Image 1 (tube, rainbow, N blue to C red):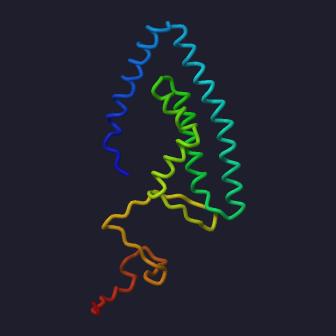
Image 2 (image 1 turned 90 degrees about the horizontal axis):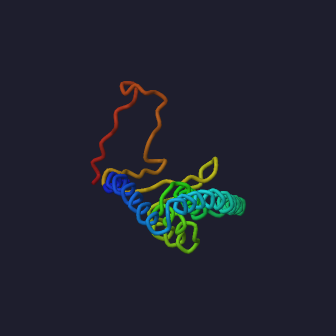
Image 3 (image 1 turned 180 degrees about the vertical axis):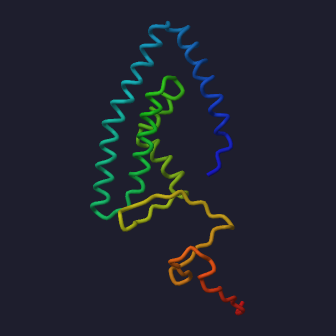
Length: 165
């Protein structure tokens, strides 16, 4: 997954947070600003615990009924991210964290990314993978490849070229 704007975000976000501290501090005072930041940190930890446990129980119920827990897994990750954003000091991260705690907002995010991930059932449970098909991806069925017990290429039989195009 390519994230070309990630370095820019890491540069701009702290500067914007500092500007937010200055603006809010000049309006309500330094102590009130610090109190507000501490309150959102505590709120983030509490919401992370309450909603995180709820998301885990929904995932467990989905797996017990045989339903793919993909949606619940993504919601759990968004809840975890929301809690982390609220715990981080800053008003912009707090606003994003509060938005991610709202279920309709998480549902919109889920609809956006649901076409980009695939949840498959494995022998040990469910697994999620970000998929991005490219021209270099070759998808084979089990009868279209052979596994060899050796890593030495000299011991493997040579592939036969097909001429029936």
